[in-house]
Length: 426
Image 1 (tube, one colour):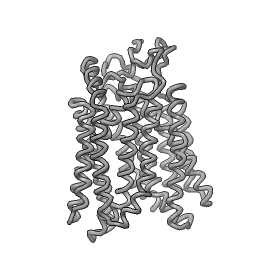
Image 2: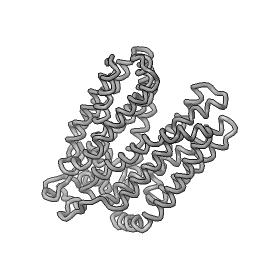
Image 3: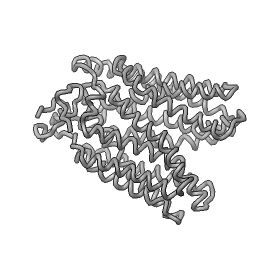
Image 4: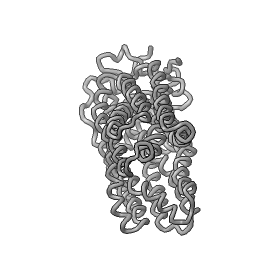
């Protein structure tokens, strides 16, 4: 067994997140606010061009499809050019395309701009996660991932609330505000991170070749993370965004406002466990919270379709959100362990993102088809089963956390995919 030279095994590892991590968290929060501004507005804006519901939905799907198709390219660009330049370029692309939406005069303009925006989105998403991995101390990867996800979640809650007021001014106003936000985020982040990322680029150059997706795929923990991220994409977009509001109105026969309450219950449950799970992940390992989170999320989501009481549905959504919140930090931390802090993992992270995007594309289609053909219970149950399938992968996956006190007993070096011989196949 190869001993790890990862800094996570250093006894005097820092106990506070570096300033650079908080910069990324703040940027994630601001980006999510902007995304929340435009997400509810975009379908309505598309319909204003006298197109049908399917065409309006295509504007949303085009963004996700573009992210999925460009992810492998963005991973290679990150590996070649470095995280910060790609991150700032991606923000710039999304800023330009989003701002241009406000001046669109035809439907195809929206479609083309969203396709280009998806390219920029996947660039800054892959590079941001790569930055997070390289800047976070290995003994704090779970905490860093939890805070980063919490920043995005809180921004996603604040954004729609602010967007409602902007829509009263103009349907085009949210796009201009979001574009301005992205420019500010790019300038501030670039200034605050430029010196630190130069150091990490030098470290990566000294460490050797970038991490490779094919080698990472040979590690069972990375395969388990891919399946879990697919399940997460399916659940978030296949059920919570697409079906929960419809279920509340059509099956539970509640006003439209209850759909927002149900989504808020998911978000509250998610936020309640995200911050707590991060430190637990760094202290007790990646597998325990993953196993509990997937089990809770799978079972709670699976039974939601059989609930007949609106109040019980809110409680079930809260529990499902808590389970989902327990999954995110250890899942991201596991991928970080697999890559190692000294390797540049662009293609490995691109594959990880593609798993979620694939779930986000397939989930709404299959869940919606199941709801129409077999009823809402079948759609919710299928989503729960997907999470439980991910649980099976995690039962078989090894622990990737290494403690300072047991560096010689742990196999983190098996996860350092920049060095292929260090990976144990299985």
